[in-house]
Each structure stands twice: as structure tokens, then as C-alpha cells.
Image 1 (cartoon, rainbow, N blue to C red):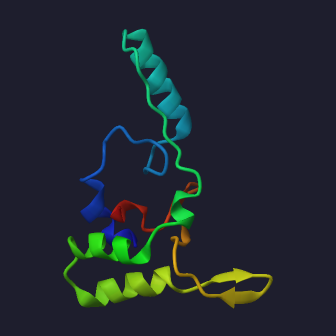
Image 2: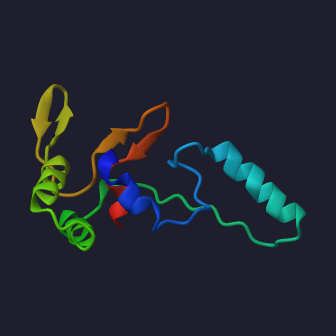
Amino acid sequence: MQVLQGRWDAVFSQHRHVFWPGRSAHQAVAKAQKHIAEGRRWVVDLDLEKFFDRVNHDKLMAAVARRVADKRVLKLIRAFLTAGVMENGLVGPVDEGTPQAVRSGSEQEPGCQNGL
């Protein structure tokens, strides 16, 4: 997935902080405080609870396919999405949601989130 990161990063807001390399929630709060001190009246913080648990695989794959033409890569991403979830030592199937991947370092990033 990290191979695709460069292809996707450019389409997202540069004001994003959480799950972005070298940025943190603490930096986001500091920037919000700076904006308020500069006279801005609005700061928006958005956290979509359970969003990545409910991602529709077909819609995600359609969005990814608009940017990725290589069928092998699309097949790999689909396999990643449908690999299953291990609970109590047993792997169960999944038909929605994205697996959680760990980015280098200590931050965790929901897998495939940039495709939406």
C-alpha cells in the first residue's frame, strides 16, 4: 500500500494532520489555536466514528480503479480488503470495511482510506 501513497497524497488537503507522515493531533490543535489567535472564527475537527468499518468494497475499488490501471494491483488491493478478520484464533470473512495497517513509526493509518 505504501507504493500507492505518493499517487494519492497529492489529492488530499495539506491541512490534514492525523495519519499524515510527520504530523500529529497535537500539531493540529496548535494550528487551530494559531488560526483563532489570527482572528479566524471557525475550526473544523471531523472524526467519522466507525467509518472504516463500513467502507463498501465495490465503491472503494471503483474509486481506486479510476487512478490505478494495473489489474494486478487492483487484484492485490481487493485481496487485502477481503482477507478476513481473525477473532479468537479463527479467520472470518469480511464484506465491508478496510483492514487496519501500521505505517512506519508509531502512527496507525486505516488501510485504503485514501481511496475514497
